[in-house]
Amino acid sequence: MRRRNNQDSYVVSLAEDDSSWQRTGHLLIVADGMGAHAAGELASRLSVELIPHHYSKLLKGIPSEALQRSLVETNSEIFRKGQANPEFRSMGTTTCALAILPEGAVIAHVGDSRVYRLRGNLMEQLTFDHSLVWEMRASGDMSEEALRSNAIPKNVITRSLGPNATVAVDLEGPFPLRVGDKFLLCSDGLSGQLTDEEMGVLLQVLDIESAVQAMVHLANLRGGPDNVTVVVGEVKSDALVRGSASKDKNPSAVAPQFPVPFGIATAICILCCLVLLLLGQFPIACLAAGAGAVAFGTGWYKYQGQRVRNDFEGFYGRGPYRKATCKPDASFTAQLTNVIHELGDWVKENDWKIESKEIDEHMSLALSAERSKNYSEAIRRYTRVIALTMDEVLRAQGEKPGDSDIVY
Image (cartoon, rainbow, N blue to C red; front, side):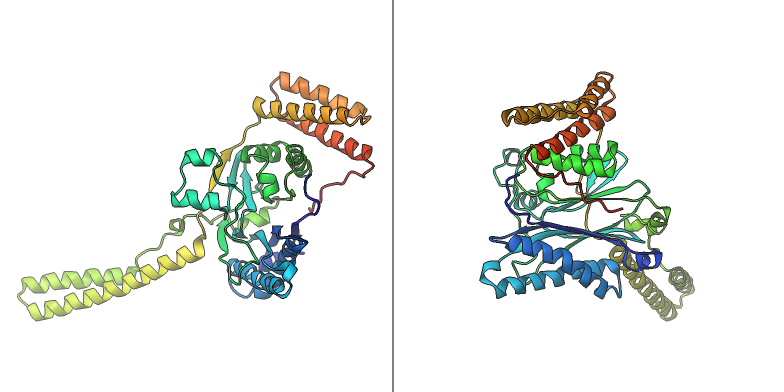
């Protein structure tokens, strides 16, 4: 609502068939650029164009490593372009990239664009904001009182792709998948205007297209200070779930065990040592004790190596970083009615002639549902009223209503 140009970019790259999914997975990316002139727009566009390219080239080993490396390579290219043109110098972009792989959902990200997962009524933020507020809170240098008072601007980014020759890219996951899981990627134009609970409720009670549309409308009607980009993907196939069903965040789910042969050898050596000591064979007992120590040391080395390998292959990062239980309630429906009233006042102030039987019908059904405390239905109807009204506003302004970009 306030930006003259769109500095956000996104891409959805779906595998064409099962074999390509097994190799590359599905890839969803959102980027939010920053920089004067058209620099931010260029940086975010380069991000969503270059990451899939580098990712496919680097897919020779572990996919999560390839995803992380693709962001590192993209950073180098954005940095070089910025250095080559004074107008683009120091341009940058936040980026969050989600890969849906056979082993689960893996995320590589830099900046404060976010990835959420809605499972049932639980909304989880799977990424850590690389912002001054989050970094200070994590280090313990910021009190809750300072956080509540907004003493530090929330939009100060500590990491992004492009401004520097090198960048640290965080990896999260793999998060196990379930049919019905919904993953939401967004720029801070959305997360800065809607709470996690509100986003979760909208995803919970609406179909994906309606939910995305409602989120964008609400972010804009609450001021729209920034570009708003939302990408939502839903797990619908059992085939996506099978590979990740046994995965768990905790590496102890596949707990490493001390190697049995070395354990047995250690026990035998200790027993022989004790017997030999009782028989007075001290030199031979020392040899048995030494053999036991060698067996135990070798077994321990293998056990520790297994632990390190499981930690490396089992899970990256510490997400989820925030959780919110989402429940349609009277509070949210009241907020939606306030938005509708403010939207109506806006229409009257501009003397737009908006008459729609469909809007009136949805409004009547919404009020009826709210009175009967059927808040899910009330939210569905209220968001439809908002969507239809916004379409009429655009027509009154001589513009054509645009549909959300939805990829199935």
